[in-house]
Image (tube, rainbow, N blue to C red; front, side, top):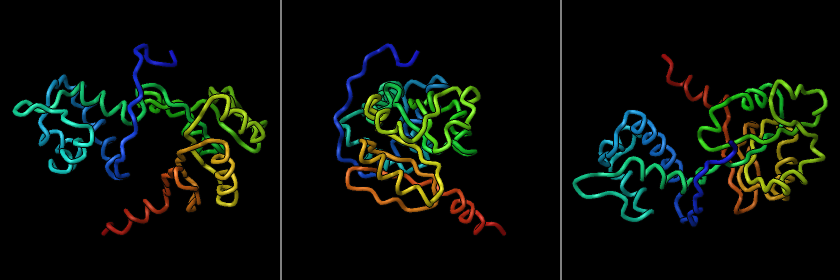
Length: 216
């Protein structure tokens, strides 16, 4: 089944700082763990501890959504989780396209955890699409010439880039021109995008260098 049976009304977008949006994801995952342990209510202090933040920061972040908790009782785990899920736009499967179906791209396609979190990679795109074994990936792999029509037909807003630096910006320009609003970028370069388009960069080498600093 592609979509959840219940119909959710999309929440209006609030003006929330980007770092706060990131923390909402931490809170949501903490709530999922609590639900898995059959916890029905949680205090701000307990939820903050599970999420790894300070209670004052958690209360400040959740205040964007109004009064969600009850004094003396805390938060309903189920209700707060659903509120955050709707705010993050994952109350129904969010279609995602992946550009660059090489080793890293193929590994991301095979990862089954995305759908559990509300994301579905609906297609891959590659300059050498004909040489890729689609049957092993379980989704269509299309040539770049079909990028425009696919994005517009499926109304896709989110893309993952696993491309060489030499072509990353050019492809990004094409994605933005065709309506992509958010990009998860694995290419080790800073992408230039207009206001209104958000890029999250994942540079594995930088992350390893950061960890290496602390090795003694």
